Amino acid sequence: MADHIEPHRVSNANIISPVVDKLFDDGRKASILYCDPPWGDAAMKMFVTLAQKRGERVSLVSFNQLLDRLFDLTKRHVSGTAFIEIGQRWVDEIGDRMVAAGLQNVRSVSLQYGKSIENTLLAGNYDGIDPDIERCRGLSGAKVAQTAIALVAKSGEILFDPTCGAGYSAKAALAHKMEFRGNEFSRSRLEKTIKLLR
Image (cartoon, rainbow, N blue to C red; front, side, top):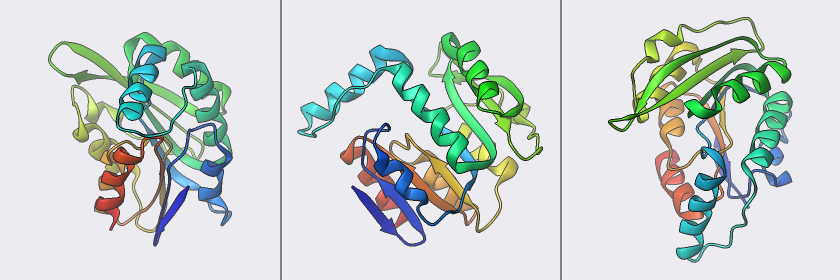
């Protein structure tokens, strides 16, 4: 299911669904991808279980399937910078997948997740713009998306988040007068993003 909150577009679908590609049926590409996907199969299962307990009809995909689809979407629909936030355990794999997807200047910076868990922001680009992601070092929560997106945001361009959750990236897009295109498999989480966009 897709919602148009002009000029924004969101879909409520599993990331592997072709519905996500329909966010770009106007032929435009995103200048920024920002994605903070669930970290690993255990996290994927937890988020699906929580959604099912809320009465949502969602199905589980593996972390590997999610990553395959994430980088397929990146190659198809992104022309600028890709930011991916991930736990340190997966940094090498994500970095390798970014390079395989044709992204250049792939770099990473350590973030903070809670009080004791470190995570990482990786960035790469298709357009030669190499943002100073060191500005994100040590940040956590919404500050990561806000700071990273501000490095390359341009009014009127598109920010895409295929796992947009409750709207950190959407809020950053709005702050920079960007169009937002996002997907989230949990309808209740997506409703928070929709509320922000309205």
